[in-house]
Amino acid sequence: MRKKTFKELLRQDIRNVFLNLDEFGESHLVNGKKMQIIIDDNELTEREKRMQSHMDGIYRKQTLVYVSAMDFGPLPGVGKPVLIDHTTFIVTDSLNEGGMYSLHLEANRS
Image (cartoon, rainbow, N blue to C red; front, top):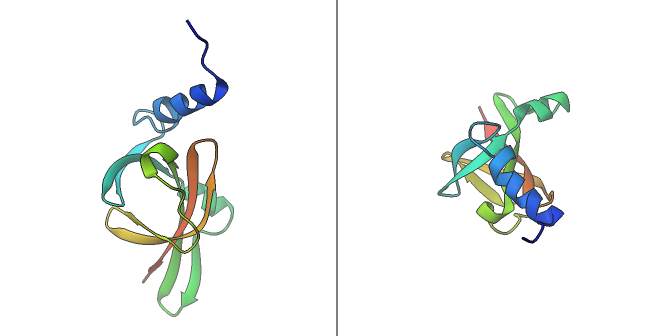
């Protein structure tokens, strides 16, 4: 039996550990497709980015989402829309972290 490479093990862990619904993952509708993702508002809170005043009564809600690259498709660029559970967010930063995307997203809220 052939030993799995580190990259193969990492891809397996993305689904079986990080995005596992019994561990960290949550099921959400992303761009019209049901996916297991992690929404990490705590990370942005620690970075003091959770809410920024934009103008009177309107705030820019920021969030950080982790999603499998295989599930999501091509890495979205800055300025691209991402629809999560019927709310449209705009990508402010995106990284491919070994087969898992981290997407910094923001949406205007009132």
